[in-house]
Image (cartoon, helix red, strand yellow):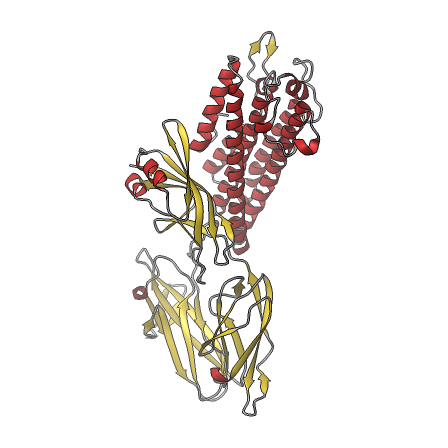
Length: 559
């Protein structure tokens, strides 16, 4: 399996696996078989962890593909590769259960739920060999769930994945950088069965003989789990590389657009028109002192310069405040340019233009933060109707929500109970006490909260990242948060596991809450530069007290 980029945890499990295999060849005590049980359970746990991580990666990739057409083709290929690997992993799982069934001579339903630890005949050599190889090792059988059938499926999977990435490079919409392509090609190679071409006792050592011939059940099942782990590694690499190639998994706000946001575009003649002019993007470069909003300015896209300077608006909280006196009725125009200094010190210009109508009364209901509502959260919305004072407005909600709660001055909060839709109807209270409709009800979509990311030392982290040893030594807690999320959605880390490799042994430290346990802190303080810290099995509680599993992260220590 040379060339596989395994994590230190996987490498440690691999070393234990090799040691046990060597000891088994020396025919030492039956206790060695218990070592295989331990390795097998570690492999299965690692495979489950990778499965969760891959599912969360694909979920994030899917959201990126919805927002960016260029990422969609890469996402579809990632899904295609994942389906192919999942099918073979499921087949191997069936093989393991079948081996336990025929060796233990138990009902299939019992074998499907029986863990290797509780198998009585884990030292049986004959039945597993007959099931996988047959009665003549020089002519391996080709029946269902045989080693030869497994070899065919692995070879076919290897060919399919190679064809997939080669086909991607023939399409401009799915090109892979050469370095990424070569890395994937090498990674895929670990699942292809290869013969050693050696001879032992006048028998050619084929891949089938090497992995399954005359080995006890415990070793055979562990070998199959190791093959599953190799395939899962390839699956992870495919998803990571395709997501990276799409350039869309982590959204960087490098596209900006100027927006005019007004409480209402329909107002009565004689009233003031008010609006906020904002740059609809956010980043670390966005600051109150590096932007100007120039009313009436005109921008030439050819020369990339202003041809009319316009009049600067005062900035309040990063927004330009507009307060224009209106007269008459009909369509009015508002235009200008936002002058913005980016993080590189370069000046960029973003023209804006907006029309508004001075007309008869009409109600407006809008979510303060976004176009959707989120289940389980208190979502703020603003309700207004031109010509009607906020105190004379009556709002009613129908759908999967709790009642609207007034917050004053046209502000309300709404708390959806489940996903789906809801409608908000607005009425004005007339002088005689009757209610007058202010237009058709406004419909909102209700969505579940996005999965948060892990946050360490105030930074969002994902996958493997570097950290200075001194910084790691003072690491005290981890957090969970949704980057760029406008609502006040507080996530609280409930538990996680910190794993470190020390003196050739992997030690796991269960941590409750968001703080590292004292044992975990002491273990980390003893690590040297180049070591890795695994933070796994992270469970967070969302604002509704629902448990949310988060992606595992790996810290690589630097000097």
